[in-house]
Image (cartoon, rainbow, N blue to C red; front, side, top):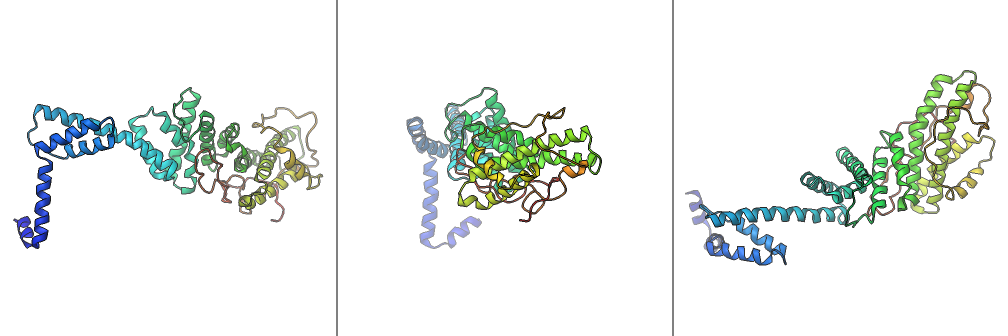
Length: 395
């Protein structure tokens, strides 16, 4: 009754339009119209699936009060076909969102749905894992956790022998492995720098742009600084500070020196690779300040210009692995220490940008175009709490 009254209240032209629409809808679902839609579907399901999909959706949108056995089979078939088509199309949309639109929240949502339906889809897993580091700038804890999980699974899949036929967007296995390791390392460095270190070093082993990015090595240096160094230097301070030197304290200090040497190596690589890149000028200044500080700590009698020689020759050397803990003192210590244990150890201070953090442990600030692109410059945002460190020169 209400609909009839509303219709009578419309102007004549509007009434004609509504009636025409209703008649058209009825005609579209007439048996003859459904037959045409089904023929359109069968004629195009191979050559033009988009057209076939449109016809199938229209057919399924027409309710049949009492379908025949033949109509029931058609409805069931079209329902399955549409479902498979939409799943296949979802992959195309996923790829476009990830690589072209760079809409990472939507891409990760779609990727997660695909993997839920098809957990063995290695390509989607690799796409998510290798591109996971790109979510860092979004400051989304849930998305970050998902990215790390996908990256870990991607690494396990590749190292377990799985592969894909289409490496589009990733180039090859080495690129996928490098960036999946980089994802885990860069996204976990704040909470677990010691654990992140292993992934960052692994990421730098492959011939990808990561190997030539100063950010990679600044992250490695920062992971050493806020991870192993912070832990060992605090332990040293708690056990030996202010006490006479002993063989045990000397051994502990020698192990700390190994870590500091790795930090010097990382910061030197970051400075060398930053070169004259104007976009990295601010980061290079921070890395260079840290490099000078740690160089002076390890070489107190050397002039500060000794740092220049370190930077000049660092890229000719291979990246050193994590140091093996010493169980006995080296025959010839690399640096001489005198006096009480406290006088030769790091003292409380800052080792970052003046805010109590290691400035090397920074995240990429903006996403790269693809996982094969050079990571964006590191931000100056700290990634972890300040370790016990030598006092820095005035900045």
